[in-house]
Each structure stands twice: as structure tokens, then as C-alpha cells.
Image (cartoon, rainbow, N blue to C red; front, side, top):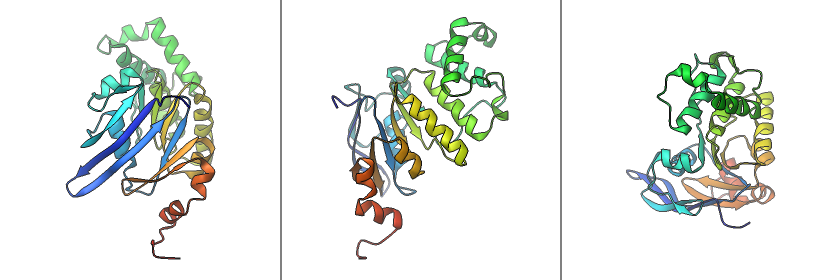
Length: 252
């Protein structure tokens, strides 16, 4: 598969006596969707926060595109090609979908403090904003205020905002959270289309969505990766079944 795009080695994060990530190893290769699954409290969001640069690890290393970024700040990782979708929706509700993407583009291009009117008149920014909205399936919603979009459409808009940064790697923290079956299907379809041009680290509770998207899956339990492999390998792994069924190790 060649050199990894993302390489996490022996990552450790503790809060007092609690170990949240315990010597985690993880790789994402170019063109791959690598999913991280596990029970609530397993440390998945904390792991993503460390990879994104929002939370410093206590030990271990993170390499991105062959460079050590373990101590690099969030903005440096973003500029190098990491894009982050958060677990909770984070939009400017009173702004249109297009204006939300324009804000992301301004931040990416380093001129987010220009007057807002100038940004709306910038043809190159507008063209790219419309391109991102179209890729996210929101081509007809550019002028709709974010607060008037459905929950699923708001998540699609957040994906468009992530794409505004032209990421090589998308860090997706539960992109289908709070969605019904139809909205989940749309999000899975969107991410399937984007996989042609983006690598992804996907944290997700919906196992059917994971099975439909992932090339590889790592299972995190109490901060440790207990299994990593392809979809069928993970589905049949007895340790994974115990983790999700809540069985004790001593049970037969």
C-alpha cells in the first residue's frame, strides 16, 4: 500500500489516573478509509483530538505525509492537509450555506479579517464555495440559512466546509450522529464519492455505515486497540464481539 499518509505510534494520553489512549498504533494510507469503532468512553474522540492537534499526547508520535507533527499546532496541521469534522454540529446558523463555506475558505486562504462584503464579491472564493457545496450535495441550498437546513444537510454543509481546506486526510468524528436512516444513507453516499480524492479516518457508532465505507477497521476499548483488520475479519473477531456484547472475559 506504500507509505502511510498518517502514522500514529504508541500514542498515550492520561487524565489523572485514567488512561484514555494506551499506546495506540494506527495508520491511514492514501485513498483509504480507516474506521475507528468502540463502545462509549473508549477514547475515540480523544484519539482524534490528538491527531488533529487539539490535545497534546503524553507520549508517542504522529507523522503526517512523512513529517513528525506530534507537537505541531492545529492550524499547521490544517494547512498541511488535515481536515476535521466534529462530533457536534458547528455552524454559523444565521449565515447562508454559501457564507459558511466562504468563511472556511477565508480562514484557509489567510484573509479571514477582510470585510465580509469583499469576500462575497471575490469570484475565486465564490466559485470554490459553490464547488464545495455541489460536492457535498447542497448545490441548490447555497442561499439557505444554515439554521433552516435539516440536521443531515447541516452535516453535509460541515463536510463542504472541511473540503474548503482541500484536505488530504479527513478526520470524521461520527458524521452520521443523530441521523435517521435516509439521512445516514445520504451521508454514506457522500463519503463514498469523496473517497476517490480523500483519505479518511472515520469514527462512527453506526456499524452498518462503517461496514459500507471502511477499508480497514480498528477497535478501541478502554483506550487500547484490541483488533485491526478488514471488515469481515473484524466482524468475526471474538474479542470484538465480547466488547460489543458486554460479555466478561471469563464467560464461555
